[in-house]
Length: 271
Image (cartoon, rainbow, N blue to C red; front, side, top):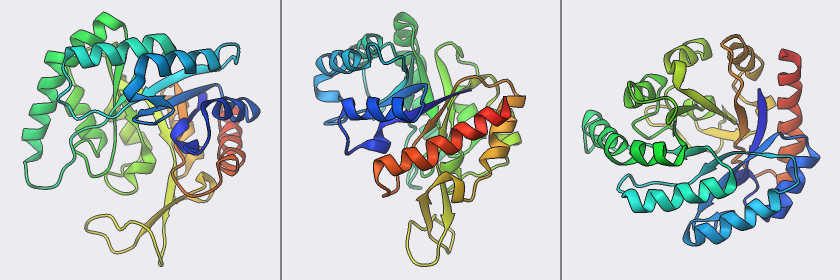
């Protein structure tokens, strides 16, 4: 298994600083945040991708992925430009969310819409570009559980579609034991986001149907047993990236010092 940093964790740092910190703390790669004014600027994709590629050159860091934001109406031309930027970066993996679920439209209808978009538009372009779209397990979206992720992608070519297992998101909605989650996702498991949270009494986001707020923080002090999660991933033969997505308010370098070093210790112990 390899360790990467999702650069959104360092949203206040420049791409040069992100690369410097990733190297300093022993990361194997970087997953790049891609949106308007992100580290990879969605408005100036080609120019921004070339700049990041130049910054990465000689760093010995891999590009673990590109993480844009979709509204699931993107046509082939839009996807082609995005996939070209991924190719410039050397990014094979591209993150994709699923439809937000508010209760107004039935889940199965939203599943049908997104599956249709994937089949008709995304997969053909991904095959042409040699990239893989990864559906992220995410709370408040239709793919909030491992089962929902698998339902959306099942039967599609795993060379071009995968699933991001995100146990941190599942603390807000969709938690299952890691053994179960990884078994359900199966051959589509392509990437893991690493973050954690814990119930708190005084502040934080309260998941729907629950009473106590949840607060993101250091993975060592959160409610997830990452030693167990890493062990299960190893037992299942996962050799992809564990990508730190630290969304709390700690200073950027503190996140690296606390979380990346903790994660490295777990991975090295599991080898």
